[in-house]
Image 1 (spheres, rainbow, N blue to C red):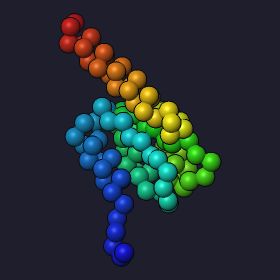
Image 2 (image 1 turned 60 degrees about the vertical axis):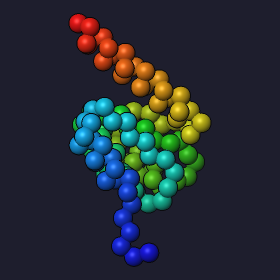
Image 3 (image 1 turned 180 degrees about the horizontal axis):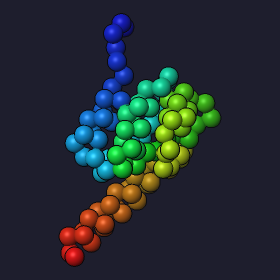
Image 4 (image 1 turned 90 degrees about the vertical axis):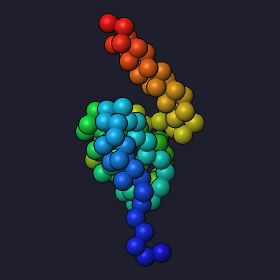
Amino acid sequence: MCGEQPAIGPLFRSADFSYGSQVIGITLSGALDDGMAGLGTVKSRGGIAIVQELSVSSMPESALAVVEVDYQVPIAETASLLVRRIAEAVTETSELKTR
């Protein structure tokens, strides 16, 4: 279809605008460089950047070329990484509130 625009880049930028350094951006498999700029925005504003580890896929490769990612993990490890990072963030927030 003509005129389609990938939604992941705007989604990353919108999340960053609303939540800043609390955002975790994940680039999974896909074509071209969709999401690369949005993931870069997330990372530059203090968020976490994760890229799926694949043998060949242009979306993660494009992100790796321009974004200093925090993690590059196989898809099977993504959920456990998210759970761990979210738990760490909740613990840090709770500690700040009790000080």
